[in-house]
Structures are given as structure tokens and as C-alpha cells.
Length: 282
Image (tube, rainbow, N blue to C red; front, top):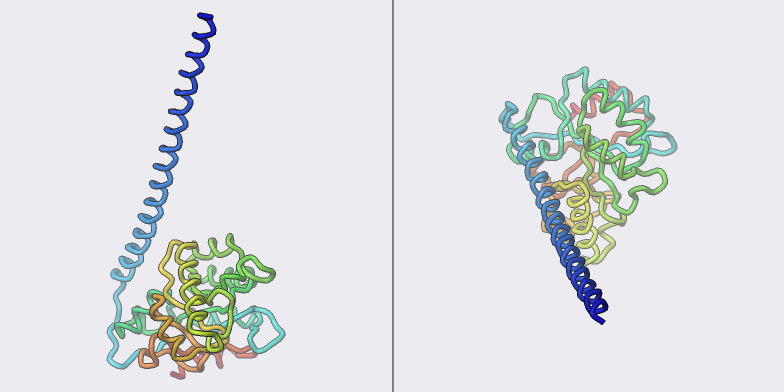
């Protein structure tokens, strides 16, 4: 009987110790999760501070006249329709920019250009791609990386990883090499056909997603098919975007409204000379 009592007592002691260890592990796990969350927040803040420092280091030129920013609009680098530009033509366009002394901008730099009416160089351009096709990675990215150029891809949230669209790994690699991923909404629906609530969901939802996915401040949105209305302009600003681009032709100017900036559509068949005239035409 005495032995049985001893075994029971030892059993209770072991259970108590096991419970304490479990609680300790859970506590340590919670503490680790908090540390990781704080670490991510710190990393995001450090990235933002680094971007700001890089801008401060540059010798920006204050312009006397309102800046006209060429925002180039590409889609797929292939053939088949008026939105697809062959890789060879894209390569020739990028070479023309380099040969003619153009500086490529990030979304943050483009925002500073328009808001402060100053530029990091006498010649500058913002390169954008709509929809996030996989050939942006397989065909455009090597050329951009070769020349050390920046570019912005407007990605559809629901298209990530789908056939012929960018994957998570591809986007991560591109971001690590001076490219930016910005919003093209969640489902790529024509915003002007949606209710105000649906528009808000598309705009706010995609921004929240890309903010979290890339630990960034998503600054830009491209309206699907270029469609928008007065509600869209208001909701885009309320969602926290600093800029929004349309498909309306021409150079982007602050007077157009930061939520309705124009772009230069780059169509197939455009020679380097014609490409240059389009950019410099203002």
C-alpha cells in the first residue's frame, strides 16, 4: 500500500513538471511570435528610413516649369495584340533610354518628382507593367537588371501564381533587384461598373494585401482597363494610395490630379526613334 502511494505521488509530481514545461514552452512561443512581429515592423521601418535617406542623398534639381513625367505603360512582352510588345522591341526601348541619359524612377521617387516639382536628373522616366504577366520576369527582368533599371509592376492580387502570371518567388526576386510591386486591385474588375462599397473593397483590400505581403507602403494603383469615376478617385485616396494611373494618353502632371495620372501606351511596332519622340514630345 505504501509503495502504491509513493507511485501515485511520483506520478502527480511528473504531471506537474510536465504541465509547467508546457506552459513555459507556450510562453516562450508567444514571446518568440511577439519578437518576430516586432522584428518585421522594425525591418519595415528601417527600409522606409533607408529609402528616405537615399532620396535625401540625391542632388535633386528644382524645376521652374511644372514637371511632365513620362510614365510608360507596358503589358506582356510577346505578340498577338496591341497590348503586347515583342521582347526585341522592349530591349531596344530600354537601350534608347540608357543611351540618351534617362534615369528610371521608383514609385516613391515619382511621387517626389510630382509633389516637389524637382527631379533627380534632367531626364527621367517611370516604367510600368500592368497585370503581372510571367514574361515580365522571364523577358523584361533580365534586360532591366542588365541595365540596372527600376520598374513598377501593377499586380492583380488574385492572379498571383496563376498560369502566365508571376509567382511569389519571382516577385520576391524582382523586388530584391530594384523593381516594385504595386496594386492592380484584387480581381481586375472595371471599377466604374462597381458599387461604391465594391470599389472600396477592391482598392483597400489589395493595398492591405500588398502592404503586408511585401512589408511595404503600397503607393500606387493602376485602375483596371483604365476605368474609373469620381467615387474611384475619392476612394483611392481614402485607401491610402499616393498616386493612381489611368490609360489616358500623355505625360503625367500634378494638375491632372494625383489619383488620375496619364501614361504613355507603348504599342508594338514602335521603333527606338519613334519611342524617343513619344517620350520627349511632352
